[in-house]
View (tube, rainbow, N blue to C red):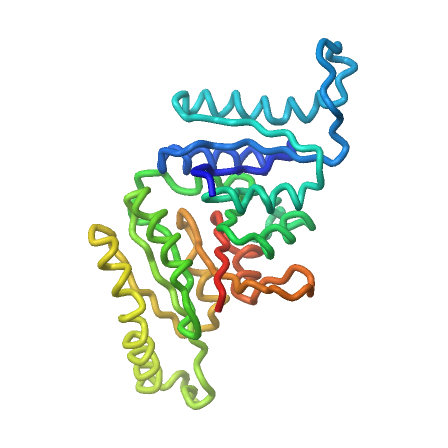
Length: 290
């Protein structure tokens, strides 16, 4: 793995916002930014060919425009450009494996808090072993960088390991000097409901059980990041609804995705699916084994 943040560019406004977000993150982490554009029909460069006959003109312009924009914002940030004549999905997956983070743009739907995740993005998010961050148009600067109340949200489950999610969330929050809000959603059982509403005693018992189980999960991360404020946020609702609501106004939402080795096509779990389609801030999807 190289010490780089890679962003996939396709010439859209969404990918430009993704590039700006990636540049900010690379600058915070003091590492290199890689601008990547892959198109299977790219041709071999012909030295000395006039611009009007250069079949790669638009591909070069996509990367060049992004490079100029980012250099203006981050004049000291090291940037590398890469044009690949291959399938975009495969190129991005290989780039993800060699990067600290892969960043992609996602198209926001008007009047709906949603992502439109195309085939390429879906395959990459569902198959990449490294964290993939999805940035919708207009969300690159969702909150001012110094807004400590915005923070990073990490959606965690207590049914398996969430170390990769917490590692990425804590590392990202530490680089931004903001807190991590660790969100766990737990749907209430039928017996929690009474004719007048939710039985407060049952709700308290469930909340106490979750808090007791969550404490040892968070202890290693509090020890590893002693200066980082880690806030527990237990919500008595479905995990998917909990993380989407908790993400409102935050700098980043981090969710997990189980690795699927079998050839069943790209799949996301219900929480990751809800996050990438409905969260109104950038979303990081982090893979884990169990």
